[in-house]
Length: 186
Length: 148
Image (cartoon, rainbow over the protein chains, first blue to last red):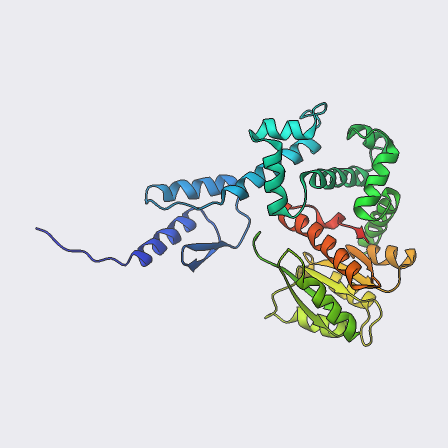
């Protein structure tokens, strides 16, 4: 016996998506035209699981290659700044191009185009973020922080901090301490 | 999401300042959607409206009638729902005391209103660019302080 089947592709795909999103416990909204909005942060593990579960239906998550590369550059920079063992004695341009297997010129162009800032500025921003974190923890002096982050002097770190944030490291510390005082009174 | 534009709300009672502000954003590379309100009370009514999509950045003039910048800042900071909004103080004053007081109350950015249009554009561009990094790289907004 043979039967004939008629299907509504859109509906089929939508149902599959819905089931798989629910299986992976991802809160979502299906927007139609192949677009799904996640209503929460999704871990890479969950994302992998979700992507694999769609694979056998021939459904594939479209990712922009540029976006992926930018994320890799950012991850490498964060690792370089926050993880002291990573690349203390190597120039950041050498470190990035070796780690990501592209010329630094290529990385640098694509980074500026997508993020509106340069790799150099992003590295400074991350270093200042790390400095803030260390200041807040109150365990290291600014001199020790400068040494830890490979600044030639504490003055160099101080002026870079001031240039980036508009305030001095000590004003920053004072403001955060006052905020804490207020918060503890509530 | 990363590709959306940045939503910006300005509270300022001066009409010229509001117009300059809107014009300055139109020339920036990063996509922004700007709207304005006339004072702090209007601002709070706007963001408290459940229909409103909350802005990413609020620019607050300090001297406004009905509800001024400091009072608005305090009210905004009391509400957990607004904790992800970056607050920029946008004022003619640049006294260290005002800067520090507003930072302590939870403002993230302090700008002295520039005296001409070109520097206004430059300053706003810098803010949106840095804010973009916080927005797209998951940086800690609790310690985001910027004075320009």
